[in-house]
Length: 276
Ligand SMILES: *[C@@H]1O[C@H](CO)[C@@H](O)[C@H](O)[C@H]1NC(C)=O
Image (tube, rainbow, N blue to C red; front, side, top):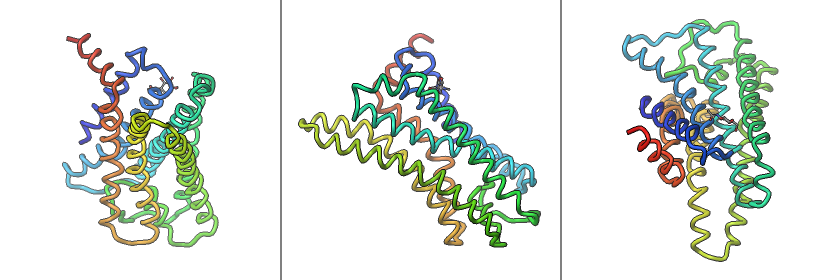
Protein backbone atom coordinates (compact mmCIF):
# COMPACT_ATOMS: atom_id res chain seq x y z
CA UNK A 1 0.00 0.00 0.00
CA UNK A 2 2.85 2.34 0.80
CA UNK A 3 4.50 1.72 -2.57
CA UNK A 4 1.22 2.23 -4.41
CA UNK A 5 0.66 5.48 -2.54
CA UNK A 6 4.11 6.87 -3.28
CA UNK A 7 4.17 5.74 -6.91
CA UNK A 8 0.61 6.88 -7.66
CA UNK A 9 1.19 10.30 -6.19
CA UNK A 10 4.59 10.65 -7.88
CA UNK A 11 2.92 9.84 -11.18
CA UNK A 12 0.44 12.67 -10.67
CA UNK A 13 3.24 15.14 -9.83
CA UNK A 14 5.14 13.96 -12.92
CA UNK A 15 2.08 14.24 -15.17
CA UNK A 16 1.25 17.74 -13.96
CA UNK A 17 4.79 19.07 -14.15
CA UNK A 18 5.56 17.59 -17.59
CA UNK A 19 2.37 18.56 -19.37
CA UNK A 20 1.88 22.25 -20.07
CA UNK A 21 -1.85 21.64 -20.67
CA UNK A 22 -2.14 20.90 -16.96
CA UNK A 23 -0.45 24.09 -15.83
CA UNK A 24 -3.59 25.52 -14.30
CA UNK A 25 -4.34 26.12 -10.60
CA UNK A 26 -6.58 23.08 -10.18
CA UNK A 27 -3.76 20.71 -11.14
CA UNK A 28 -1.13 22.64 -9.23
CA UNK A 29 -3.25 22.17 -6.13
CA UNK A 30 -3.67 18.51 -7.00
CA UNK A 31 0.08 17.94 -7.34
CA UNK A 32 0.72 19.80 -4.10
CA UNK A 33 -1.87 17.53 -2.48
CA UNK A 34 -0.01 14.53 -3.86
CA UNK A 35 3.23 15.86 -2.39
CA UNK A 36 1.54 16.34 0.99
CA UNK A 37 0.10 12.81 0.76
CA UNK A 38 3.53 11.32 0.14
CA UNK A 39 4.89 13.19 3.17
CA UNK A 40 1.88 12.21 5.25
CA UNK A 41 2.26 8.47 4.72
CA UNK A 42 6.06 8.67 4.91
CA UNK A 43 5.96 9.98 8.47
CA UNK A 44 4.20 6.87 9.76
CA UNK A 45 4.51 3.86 7.46
CA UNK A 46 8.33 3.39 7.22
CA UNK A 47 8.57 3.42 11.02
CA UNK A 48 5.71 0.94 11.17
CA UNK A 49 7.46 -1.36 8.71
CA UNK A 50 10.72 -1.18 10.69
CA UNK A 51 8.76 -1.96 13.87
CA UNK A 52 7.18 -5.00 12.27
CA UNK A 53 10.52 -6.27 10.96
CA UNK A 54 12.44 -5.75 14.19
CA UNK A 55 9.59 -6.74 16.56
CA UNK A 56 10.03 -3.63 18.67
CA UNK A 57 7.43 -1.02 19.28
CA UNK A 58 9.44 1.61 21.06
CA UNK A 59 9.94 5.19 19.98
CA UNK A 60 12.15 7.75 21.68
CA UNK A 61 10.76 10.95 23.12
CA UNK A 62 12.42 13.09 20.47
CA UNK A 63 11.42 10.64 17.76
CA UNK A 64 7.84 10.77 18.91
CA UNK A 65 7.74 14.56 18.92
CA UNK A 66 9.39 14.68 15.49
CA UNK A 67 6.91 12.20 14.08
CA UNK A 68 4.03 14.12 15.56
CA UNK A 69 5.29 17.43 14.14
CA UNK A 70 5.70 16.13 10.61
CA UNK A 71 2.42 14.28 10.85
CA UNK A 72 0.69 17.51 11.87
CA UNK A 73 2.38 19.55 9.11
CA UNK A 74 1.44 17.17 6.31
CA UNK A 75 -1.98 16.31 7.72
CA UNK A 76 -2.85 19.96 8.07
CA UNK A 77 -1.46 20.66 4.60
CA UNK A 78 -3.81 17.99 3.21
CA UNK A 79 -6.66 19.52 5.09
CA UNK A 80 -5.91 23.08 3.89
CA UNK A 81 -5.37 22.01 0.27
CA UNK A 82 -8.71 20.20 0.22
CA UNK A 83 -10.29 23.46 1.36
CA UNK A 84 -8.42 25.45 -1.28
CA UNK A 85 -9.54 22.94 -3.92
CA UNK A 86 -13.16 23.27 -2.82
CA UNK A 87 -12.82 27.05 -3.15
CA UNK A 88 -11.23 26.59 -6.57
CA UNK A 89 -14.18 24.50 -7.72
CA UNK A 90 -16.59 27.02 -6.27
CA UNK A 91 -15.01 29.83 -8.30
CA UNK A 92 -14.85 27.66 -11.44
CA UNK A 93 -18.50 26.62 -11.25
CA UNK A 94 -20.19 29.68 -9.76
CA UNK A 95 -18.06 32.48 -11.25
CA UNK A 96 -16.60 31.01 -14.44
CA UNK A 97 -16.01 34.40 -16.04
CA UNK A 98 -14.05 35.70 -13.04
CA UNK A 99 -12.04 32.48 -12.69
CA UNK A 100 -8.90 33.64 -14.61
CA UNK A 101 -8.85 36.82 -12.53
CA UNK A 102 -9.43 35.29 -9.09
CA UNK A 103 -7.26 32.20 -9.62
CA UNK A 104 -4.30 33.82 -11.35
CA UNK A 105 -0.86 32.26 -10.72
CA UNK A 106 -0.09 34.81 -7.98
CA UNK A 107 -3.23 34.09 -6.02
CA UNK A 108 -2.98 30.33 -6.34
CA UNK A 109 0.68 30.38 -5.30
CA UNK A 110 -0.28 32.57 -2.35
CA UNK A 111 -2.98 30.10 -1.30
CA UNK A 112 -0.46 27.25 -1.36
CA UNK A 113 2.10 29.21 0.68
CA UNK A 114 -0.60 30.26 3.13
CA UNK A 115 -1.68 26.62 3.55
CA UNK A 116 1.90 25.69 4.29
CA UNK A 117 2.38 28.46 6.86
CA UNK A 118 -0.87 27.47 8.58
CA UNK A 119 0.33 23.88 8.72
CA UNK A 120 3.61 24.94 10.34
CA UNK A 121 1.67 26.95 12.89
CA UNK A 122 -0.57 23.99 13.62
CA UNK A 123 2.35 21.66 14.19
CA UNK A 124 4.09 24.19 16.45
CA UNK A 125 0.94 24.61 18.52
CA UNK A 126 0.71 20.85 18.96
CA UNK A 127 4.36 20.79 20.00
CA UNK A 128 3.77 23.58 22.47
CA UNK A 129 0.96 21.67 24.15
CA UNK A 130 2.79 18.35 24.27
CA UNK A 131 6.03 19.91 25.51
CA UNK A 132 4.21 21.03 28.63
CA UNK A 133 4.06 17.43 29.81
CA UNK A 134 6.90 16.71 32.12
CA UNK A 135 6.10 13.08 32.89
CA UNK A 136 6.04 11.79 29.34
CA UNK A 137 8.59 9.02 29.82
CA UNK A 138 7.10 5.54 29.61
CA UNK A 139 3.72 6.07 28.06
CA UNK A 140 1.92 3.45 26.00
CA UNK A 141 0.11 4.79 22.97
CA UNK A 142 -2.40 2.37 21.52
CA UNK A 143 -1.58 3.17 17.92
CA UNK A 144 1.16 2.57 15.39
CA UNK A 145 2.44 6.15 15.43
CA UNK A 146 2.53 9.20 17.68
CA UNK A 147 -0.91 10.48 16.90
CA UNK A 148 -1.29 14.16 17.91
CA UNK A 149 -4.84 13.61 19.11
CA UNK A 150 -3.82 10.77 21.40
CA UNK A 151 -0.71 12.56 22.66
CA UNK A 152 -2.79 15.57 23.59
CA UNK A 153 -5.08 13.33 25.59
CA UNK A 154 -2.22 11.75 27.53
CA UNK A 155 -2.19 14.94 29.49
CA UNK A 156 -4.58 14.14 32.31
CA UNK A 157 -3.52 16.95 34.61
CA UNK A 158 -6.47 19.02 33.28
CA UNK A 159 -4.20 21.94 32.78
CA UNK A 160 -6.50 24.84 31.96
CA UNK A 161 -4.25 26.65 29.49
CA UNK A 162 -3.40 23.49 27.58
CA UNK A 163 -7.09 22.60 27.34
CA UNK A 164 -7.87 26.03 25.93
CA UNK A 165 -5.01 25.66 23.45
CA UNK A 166 -6.32 22.23 22.49
CA UNK A 167 -9.75 23.56 21.62
CA UNK A 168 -8.33 26.57 19.77
CA UNK A 169 -6.19 24.30 17.58
CA UNK A 170 -9.17 22.02 16.98
CA UNK A 171 -11.31 25.00 15.95
CA UNK A 172 -8.70 26.67 13.81
CA UNK A 173 -7.53 23.62 11.92
CA UNK A 174 -10.65 21.47 11.94
CA UNK A 175 -13.71 23.64 12.09
CA UNK A 176 -12.77 26.49 9.74
CA UNK A 177 -11.59 24.34 6.82
CA UNK A 178 -14.74 22.24 7.11
CA UNK A 179 -16.82 25.40 7.19
CA UNK A 180 -15.05 26.64 4.04
CA UNK A 181 -15.64 23.34 2.23
CA UNK A 182 -19.24 23.27 3.35
CA UNK A 183 -19.94 26.82 2.16
CA UNK A 184 -18.24 26.20 -1.19
CA UNK A 185 -20.28 23.08 -1.79
CA UNK A 186 -23.47 24.69 -0.65
CA UNK A 187 -22.97 27.37 -3.33
CA UNK A 188 -21.88 24.79 -5.93
CA UNK A 189 -24.92 22.56 -5.39
CA UNK A 190 -27.18 25.60 -5.42
CA UNK A 191 -25.89 26.75 -8.80
CA UNK A 192 -25.81 23.23 -10.27
CA UNK A 193 -29.47 22.75 -9.40
CA UNK A 194 -30.27 25.77 -11.55
CA UNK A 195 -28.65 24.24 -14.67
CA UNK A 196 -31.66 23.49 -16.92
CA UNK A 197 -30.40 20.38 -18.78
CA UNK A 198 -30.13 17.06 -16.89
CA UNK A 199 -26.96 16.17 -18.84
CA UNK A 200 -25.22 19.36 -17.70
CA UNK A 201 -26.31 18.72 -14.12
CA UNK A 202 -24.89 15.23 -14.17
CA UNK A 203 -21.58 16.38 -15.64
CA UNK A 204 -21.18 19.11 -13.03
CA UNK A 205 -22.07 16.75 -10.18
CA UNK A 206 -19.70 14.05 -11.37
CA UNK A 207 -16.83 16.54 -11.51
CA UNK A 208 -17.08 17.56 -7.89
CA UNK A 209 -18.39 14.23 -6.64
CA UNK A 210 -14.88 12.82 -6.50
CA UNK A 211 -13.48 15.71 -4.56
CA UNK A 212 -16.37 15.37 -2.17
CA UNK A 213 -15.75 11.67 -1.60
CA UNK A 214 -12.10 12.33 -0.69
CA UNK A 215 -13.23 15.06 1.68
CA UNK A 216 -15.70 12.75 3.39
CA UNK A 217 -13.18 9.94 3.71
CA UNK A 218 -10.44 12.16 5.10
CA UNK A 219 -12.51 14.30 7.42
CA UNK A 220 -14.86 11.56 8.56
CA UNK A 221 -12.03 9.41 9.81
CA UNK A 222 -9.79 12.14 11.18
CA UNK A 223 -12.61 13.82 13.07
CA UNK A 224 -13.58 10.40 14.34
CA UNK A 225 -10.07 9.93 15.72
CA UNK A 226 -9.57 13.43 17.06
CA UNK A 227 -12.81 13.66 18.98
CA UNK A 228 -13.39 9.95 19.39
CA UNK A 229 -10.15 9.57 21.35
CA UNK A 230 -11.40 12.27 23.70
CA UNK A 231 -14.76 10.58 24.25
CA UNK A 232 -14.30 6.82 23.96
CA UNK A 233 -11.43 4.69 25.13
CA UNK A 234 -11.77 1.98 22.49
CA UNK A 235 -8.29 1.50 20.99
CA UNK A 236 -9.54 -0.71 18.14
CA UNK A 237 -11.87 1.91 16.67
CA UNK A 238 -9.13 4.48 16.89
CA UNK A 239 -6.67 2.16 15.20
CA UNK A 240 -9.01 1.31 12.33
CA UNK A 241 -9.79 4.97 11.70
CA UNK A 242 -6.06 5.79 11.83
CA UNK A 243 -5.25 3.15 9.25
CA UNK A 244 -7.96 4.51 6.97
CA UNK A 245 -6.84 8.10 7.09
CA UNK A 246 -3.08 7.58 7.15
CA UNK A 247 -2.94 4.79 4.56
CA UNK A 248 -6.14 4.31 2.61
CA UNK A 249 -7.07 7.93 1.90
CA UNK A 250 -3.65 9.03 0.55
CA UNK A 251 -3.56 5.86 -1.55
CA UNK A 252 -7.00 6.44 -3.01
CA UNK A 253 -6.52 10.16 -3.71
CA UNK A 254 -4.56 9.78 -6.95
CA UNK A 255 -7.00 7.17 -8.26
CA UNK A 256 -10.08 9.12 -7.36
CA UNK A 257 -8.73 12.23 -8.99
CA UNK A 258 -7.04 10.86 -12.05
CA UNK A 259 -8.85 7.74 -13.16
CA UNK A 260 -12.02 9.64 -13.89
CA UNK A 261 -10.21 12.70 -15.15
CA UNK A 262 -9.82 12.91 -18.91
CA UNK A 263 -7.03 15.52 -18.84
CA UNK A 264 -4.80 13.54 -16.50
CA UNK A 265 -5.42 10.31 -18.38
CA UNK A 266 -4.52 11.98 -21.67
CA UNK A 267 -1.39 13.47 -20.17
CA UNK A 268 -0.32 10.11 -18.70
CA UNK A 269 -0.75 8.34 -22.04
CA UNK A 270 1.19 11.14 -23.75
CA UNK A 271 3.95 10.69 -21.17
CA UNK A 272 3.89 6.95 -21.78
CA UNK A 273 4.12 7.21 -25.57
CA UNK A 274 6.96 9.70 -25.30
CA UNK A 275 8.92 7.36 -23.06
CA UNK A 276 8.62 4.23 -25.19
C1 LIG B 1 2.37 23.75 -5.82
O1 LIG B 1 1.64 24.92 -6.17
C2 LIG B 1 2.42 25.98 -6.70
C3 LIG B 1 1.54 27.18 -6.88
O2 LIG B 1 0.34 26.90 -7.50
C4 LIG B 1 3.09 25.54 -7.98
O3 LIG B 1 3.87 26.58 -8.52
C5 LIG B 1 3.95 24.32 -7.69
O4 LIG B 1 4.49 23.83 -8.88
C6 LIG B 1 3.11 23.23 -7.02
N1 LIG B 1 4.01 22.15 -6.57
C7 LIG B 1 4.05 20.98 -7.19
C8 LIG B 1 4.93 19.94 -6.63
O5 LIG B 1 3.40 20.76 -8.19
